[in-house]
Length: 216
Image (cartoon, rainbow, N blue to C red; front, side):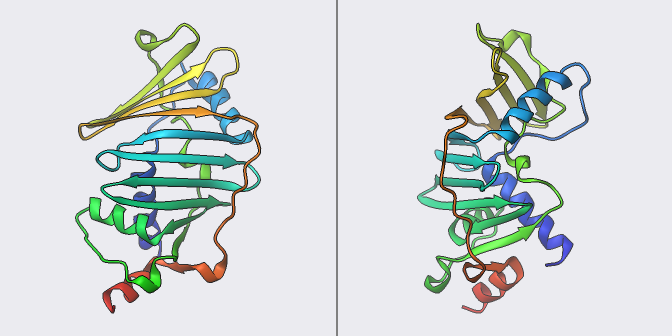
């Protein structure tokens, strides 16, 4: 797949997941953010809540360092899944189409492609979909009794991450995008999940998918 196509699919993935904003490193909050991210990367967890990608949207995430990432998202009467493992992202056709619709590109997924996953490879790890941005700064006004808040904003978007003081684990994310707000709660750290990455015969490139959709 051409590099520009990979970039487009990656941006769609970030749109759906509502991944944290990325900017420069903050030395002041770096050590605490780094420790929280170490916990996220190295330990399995579950997360559920809303998503700012779709109006009234919801999503659920499972992560296991060995098995990879699984995400289920719904909104606007649509639902779909996304997987990520070893830098490869797998978009279900329905979720891919929903993300495109949010960008003003409406497509209809033909019945013979409903079970297909569109793939893209990136030089970034799967934690890009859940790690706290290094640029997040301590927001003392949002601290809780047992949590420290780290916030990051850019343009009309903002994220606030709440990290447990004792375990350094992320427990909640509050996000705002284009007037939409969502809350995601993190739990089940260290528990076992079964995550099955799509097989090769279930996948196709975004170029191949677009070609088949346009020719359907």
